[in-house]
Length: 395
Image 1: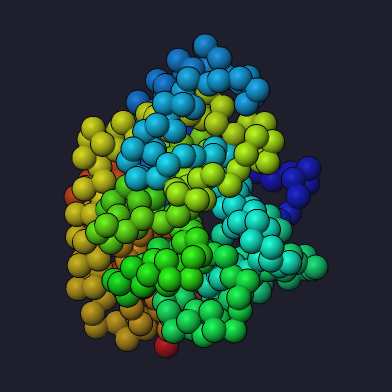
Image 2 (image 1 turned 90 degrees about the horizontal axis):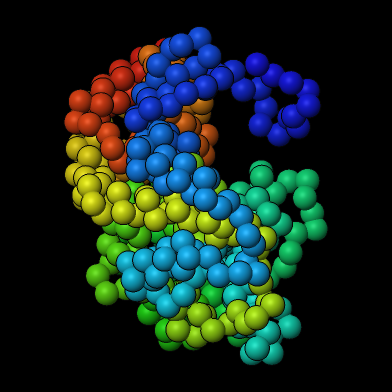
């Protein structure tokens, strides 16, 4: 199904999905697929999870929207829960990850303006992805997605990911830096996992220079990494700002920008806002997601499943010369090939498995946290066989 009424920014989409249940979706011909991409890390609880479905139905019968002119009980409850679980001080709710990152960028700009900087600078990374609004597009480290949208906002300094020394050099030549914005694991950049002490080193650097450490956890949060937030793998570490979205609503649009310390005091009445952000429906979804993640041990399960899937993939692909690396954290897994491999998406679909290829040559797996052991093995077996076949045919 296609209509010219839609802008063509998504290209030619060849699959129409009409129903989902648990870890599976069905197309308009009735064919079932195991979903190993979860709406790009969104449906961490699978599709139509009963707890989320019931919360949405109940809220839809009660109140959908009133705007932020008024107190919203579910918003306050979700804020309290997120603050408690994250160690942060407060939260601003938005409708998406890009908007949450915009809020983070505005916090940094606000701090820079208070310090009298003509152009406050934010350090960002090569290979990063932070969104497609003008500011987040500029922070994104991919010239391809920036093409055609000049002039881009100024105020961003780019360095290689997982390279603290490069940031040290910037600090020596710029006295107007206010923040570092970084993903704990680069998602769109190819599931790139940094050195174990990377975030700790960034924390020390920010403390030394009085910068904000801002973590983009749009893709890594909500249990996917094996912790509620990926920074919680680094014991004792707290960012100044952390953003999340995607899995927080399990399909309902919601974003959150959490702040701590001086960053939590930068927004004042009228300085930022959103008509829909934190509406009753989205916040009920967020509460149901957090309650389910905690109540069903799904965060711990994500770590176990991720380790199992990584081990199986590494074992089954050990003799495949085309595979450069198999890496991940929890249920964020990337298989890097030595060649472009977008064809694998269609080949996997023919095997009734939905996957994604990012950065041109990295198979990205983001399955639901509700994956069974058998489904975990099924993904590993299908993907390994397809990659080995692909490598032979492309040799």
